[in-house]
Length: 295
Image 1: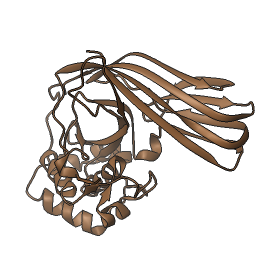
Image 2: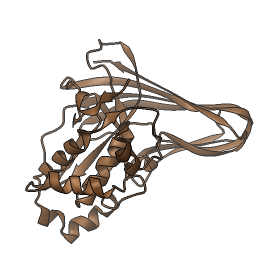
Image 3: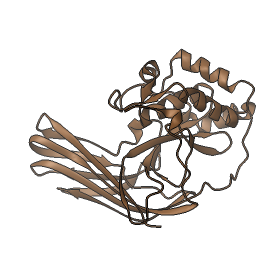
């Protein structure tokens, strides 16, 4: 079933909640794999609106692994598997306390300040389009029209709302490699597609914007201790004197049901699991996410 995106607005979560997230993913191979080299970005960050209380990433099989923080600030588990195997799995377990958005600590700014060299230099990487975010001219024109007469912060929200209105949430038509131009032409897609589309429109106006990956509790009314099937999720943040988060899939601000894992220019900077391997020519990805509200 497909659902109009603007009809999917979520009820806000409680002022603060504690969530246990178990994310299982990996590959099954049609034949033996002799070696694989991988990176997992599945560990939530500690930010002004969430605190990572406990976490563990288990890999099986594994020959060697280590942790590091990448260029974008994401927590990465890098690991090699140097024994023959027909399946490889990664299980990330994390307990996160999520709070209401804090009060803004910086004022928003106007267009002249936003386009000052000091700002464009600092945020250059979130102003440049990528192959996934490059918007078609129709989207650029729509963004300019929606932003007319508004300051950057107001314009960002107006642009995203205008983009969302004609879109339809529909899985199975796109992949993580589908560019924003194809998403707009089809007027349908899933969370990463709406994020890429929004990023392209905001960057076209000179508003720095970045891709966010994480998790979303799909049932805010679930009881304490109830485990719910969920999925990885994507949204975006823009900068207009301060960073502000917005979930274009659900046409609203980010709530305590959102748990942030990684940020980057687009999906290519933040995949939960990526790697290369030698051996079987075919593989099947498996994914399962479970979320339990603990408080």
